[in-house]
Length: 397
Image (cartoon, rainbow, N blue to C red; front, side, top):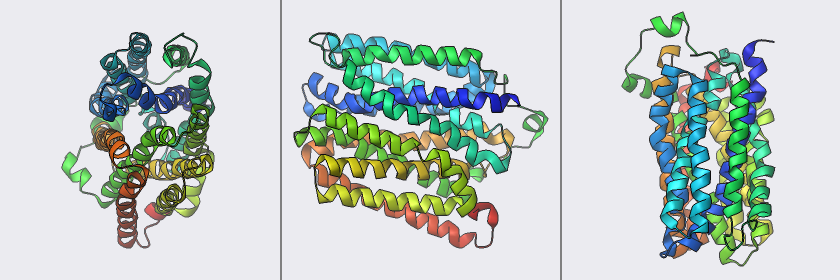
């Protein structure tokens, strides 16, 4: 067993802890923001700030880890997560909205590094196994489907007169487990070899001009943006329609399960049917999610739609990441990955920031109708690339 094979479960566990914290924040941040903010339209600002912090961290995180190594970078990031957990807990106890915003920004910095777990896997395997390595690490998020929302639900009243303070305090345990796991992982100091050092690097503009890069970026950023917009608005929409938080927690749990459970077979599906076909199916699932949300607002509607939304994200995100890895040489990985994640999380940030205003001022139907053009752009881009790559099995299979 080589070092990377031994470390795949550890990378997956770190991913699971990161996504458990994320699913807890998704289930609660808008509700905490609504309770703390004087202007209720700012309810989703804390979650949006988390995504904005992730966006701004994505480029320096990639460059820092290219210089000092993945493991030290991941350990450094976890310290930001721990600080965020402490500040968020105090913010809720003392009813300080802007403290809570600061806390979510620290979670975002942590996530900006943690999002490279999938690339840590992809960069260490050959071309044939990249999609499976990416999918397996992302599959660690299955644990998050059960841990995050349930942790939020069962700890929300642990601290008296400070709803959800206990939930954010419990995140400290997730980050401590991550530190313990990273301490025993044996990632190389750098994923660098002779080729990484000696390869001639193309300008980033040239890399980004490739049709495969363009489509990978479109599918990654819009697929994640659609998921962020609908997911962020869901707790507010369910509260508006008088559903209990236990029901919201249940819906988010199944949404997160939909995001990560398919990862156990997404890599194999990509190898069998082709990355473009799987991404196309992901976009179709996104349209089905919208259709169900427009049909009704019962718990069953929210549950089914958010489950489909999770599967949609999975196929689009893993597919886009896999396609992206075919567009750069080893020496170009840091700057290419950095550009991709910066654009993706810029879109995610705007989606999360927009969600609260759309839901508060215009309602649930407008939120869903607003993502339809984005899904159609994804479909059009995939069909465009398929038309350009007829007979090229590298992209089709």
